[in-house]
Length: 119
Image (cartoon, rainbow, N blue to C red; front, side, top):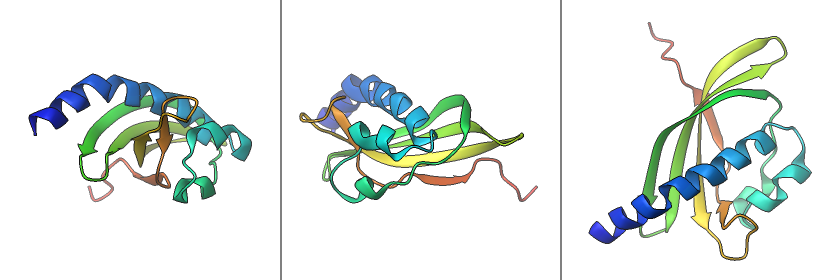
């Protein structure tokens, strides 16, 4: 457990920086901009979204030692047409020596509403 904690502490910022590079490409609407960020697994089928990122806040970062994956969750403000919305985007990242940035996105990013709409 302590080893995992040390690993998360030492790589958290690297995973965050990688993810922040990935996000504008993901919201570019251009599949070719995603190539350097994706694994050859399920994520290679990732379809980019359209939108303009207005803010990016890291909400959560966790590490699973069995799968050796980081799960990251960001709260984004995304402008689409003339409307901005708050979105929680969650995806898995894995270390990859062969990738351009040292990490790859392993899962399809999942969007959900950030704001609690039950109020």
